[in-house]
Length: 289
Image 1 (cartoon, rainbow, N blue to C red):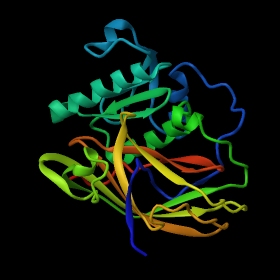
Image 2: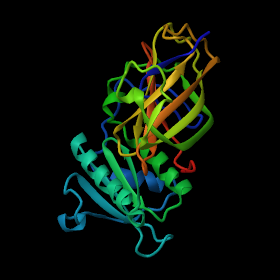
Image 3: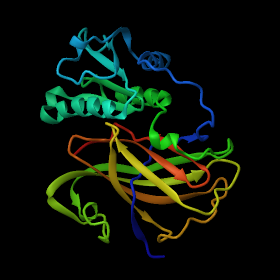
Image 4: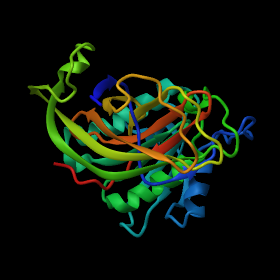
């Protein structure tokens, strides 16, 4: 069957299975202390947390509630920061600020992770593999992403799993599809506008006990600063509604996600219409070109 390319924002990550979001979730903490507690519970270093005062922000936007914690295994001066931001605009300002520092000067690189309503900034000296553990702990408590909150509630026996078969970044141009939604090829690009392309081959499986009904499957990808990334995928259904997917069955797909240089794809959402949706983390230890 002829493949077609659908312009959608997408997502995927390590093999995980999960039930969908609870219909009546418990109240969430409104301070960054929850982040520090989650790191400690995961066996990660987050020592001696201290609330941030206005003078501790430096040139960063003075928004949100923040704490500073020490990471002495890196050095006696190494530290991280965690913020609780009730407003998306404030999260975006903080994340953009810290991300932009590394874009302007590699020596000022920070690991920056966003999982609404939280933003975390970690020392750039932290290895990518270790930083990914902090991100995974953060994603377990961040739950106010507006896309997730708006999801239909899935029954407890509807499971999702995504397996990354192959993934890698490469230098690429700006896809013409970004500016012309009718362009037929997601790969065709303007090489004068340099971007990074993350290509992934995925298997998507129904790990629940009930079939996914006929209907739409959709994806969205987000950068580590919480902003949406442009992406597209090769849809073997040629634009037709997906057929019923019985438990224990999977289908494959190829995903292309585009970001600026010095940016990374952070996470995404997989959704089955009428069933629910699931959030995945994209590995942060993939080699960069």
